[in-house]
Length: 250
Image (cartoon, rainbow, N blue to C red; front, top):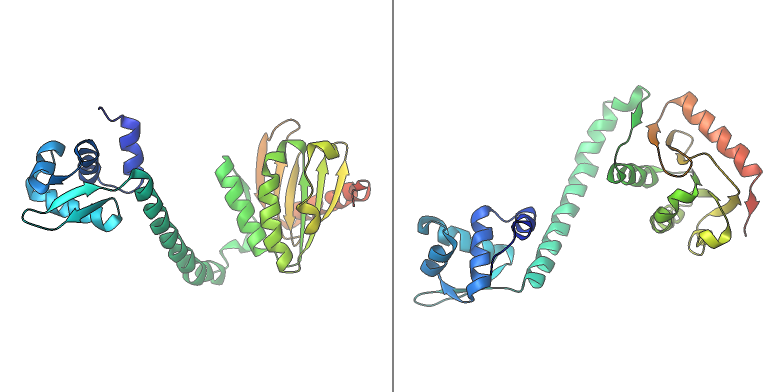
């Protein structure tokens, strides 16, 4: 059976080296093998095979039956993926702890953000990451204006605002469209929610200090983040103006 380049790429993205990838695939195809047999079938040099097998065992992709000679066999790909996921989550937790406790204080101590900035954000992942950062730092008030095209993010808003609500942050959520287009069930437990007929774009304003502005009618055409005092004040005042003329759905 021929293994596709896509499958090999997935294994490499899961932090397996080229030798480890070929070794695991050889074991998947053949089952139980000795080290010399693995080397022969995977084309991994014999001088590197034990190092490669030990690494795969450590990462949770294979198991070994010790003997003379020892025999190696693959774990189920689904089981190996689950183990890798746990390992990645542990690493991510450690990375986040280091960044939060060591690197972020350095950034704030040097007042790198003292100069007002305006950034154009490109790509959904960058927008979501910035939104998570903003809602993670908000302390007093968050204003969210959500046009209909932001509906796919409703579940994300709900989960993030649940954490924000625990910090006693005031949350104002304003959406466009009608009740049938939105499921406000989870949102109404954490935010004051209002509805209006239309809105050009939308955005998120946190503590009156930073704003994520999404411009567009049917879809986002431009996403901007800024902590510029004048721009954020204008966005907040405009939000308040729209909020006053919106329907309270509670």
